[in-house]
Length: 403
Image (cartoon, rainbow, N blue to C red; front, side, top):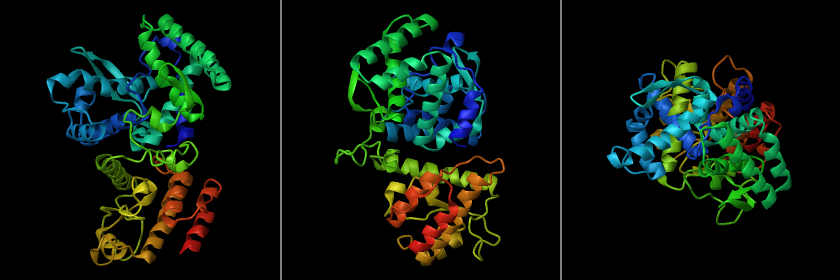
């Protein structure tokens, strides 16, 4: 799965709000990190035997959701009666947005509770895989909805002019549109949704957006549109986080967030490898004969390269023997065998090349630019970021040069 396939899917959908009257095509809780988390919880629920159709409480009452929503989003215990409304909103709003987009389906209402099922599991898994995927999807979906609904020209005008007057004019038109074509009948609700719509696009296009009802003083950055307001690695230096690709995805502020993202990446690679590679190791040698790849190994160790520990492109599926005898000699996980690290990088390059360039219907889970970022960080170079997209021969040359 990649943005081109997402766009193809979106082009096949009709999102004209003037026709659907759907005022919940997006909502306040639909920040990209919250959407990614909710999608991940749905995938975990389904992969662990959850039944369809399901309800919002089925998802947030799962052990996986309960543990992570408290650790990552600092939410209270979801099993307390007093938190019922808060959790329903936090999970239901992204689910209704995903249903409006066609990723989920709404299967009616039972006992005043919406029933959901999965409409497109490949895109749902893509969104669940990492926060940046969710951000990319949201921006494409928002833009498509605005175009289908005849609102896009108004947003383009604001992005061109970037003035307080153009912001207020755009906001007024958006609110009037919502009141006219959706069940919303007061200005407060569409005003809140307007911020969610505008600022995600402003972030994508490196433009000013809205803050506290007025034109923002600077470009909208990723940390400003997250549900979970974590710190970013360049905040202290005052760096513009829209510049470097490394700042495209938030780095977890807490150990809980960090461990969740790393564990999520490990889980998805393990599942992908089991399903599409028959559980085999990505490296074929004497340690892989007759053994399944049960270890997801960090090529560049997470203890030294925390910044890329959550990247699938830095993980490789190995057997226990490969991991604890070759990658980490004598099972010492604090030591890396440089020769085997080189072997891992060559094998991972081929795995990524096949997934992107020689795909046979399996989901595209890797990103070439992310792989270049992993290589530049891990090998402490700036060689790879300058390579043309999908030039895997140049990648191999660069790996050879650095070893």
